[in-house]
Length: 324
Image (cartoon, rainbow, N blue to C red):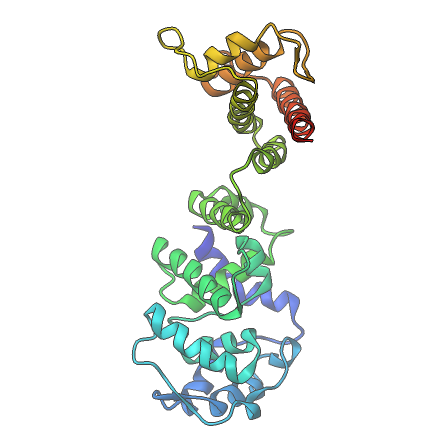
């Protein structure tokens, strides 16, 4: 499995990028010697920063002396509440979420990993309300991989595997292909992408049109289905504005389809011009997009998206003129 293999490749991949050997297991042992198990603070962070087993200072600045008095460890760091409590306190002291993640990773590798921009980018991790929430989200995603795949019992192991994968884009092609074809990996990335969109997503025709245009190259069939939804919305807005009541269609005919039958021969509607029989043509395209009988070609989907995008913009201008 790709994720276990990338974990095994971690020493080799990080060795190709660094001038000296990065022995993270040795750093863990050094930290264990100074960790009290009930508190966390300067002793552990200074051990991490001064360790000769890796190059801490190549990535982060020295903050160990600034941390202040040792901080009590929550009793259950496997719980979201325990994680949030210790991360929040450490971040308040250090003001650097990556250094917080480094400290926690070496104190409790079972439950923490290093917050890494390359891994965040690989996973498409969306921004959160603050740094603490972002790191908690990062850990939650890594925990999902730990639960999904056997052989990586610690969050730190998952972190190292994904870090290796993030730095192997131009090498290890077979493993990279296996990763991108993995259903769970794809689901995580797509979920993160949509979650990132969701903060500002309005379920409007405008936003759905952006989605349809963005999908054309990746999946033109889905782009056409989304465009079909937009077309229905546009048809019903036009019909509502010019007083076409929602008719009872023929058996098996949807209301929007019945409205299309009323509109199909109109070329000018109170200042809105459309090509002859376009409403009917677009309705048939929508049907083919949804039902695939016959399926749309790439060119037909491109044309459908472009034409409905243009229609939507003209309807928007028409709406504004009616209000003026």
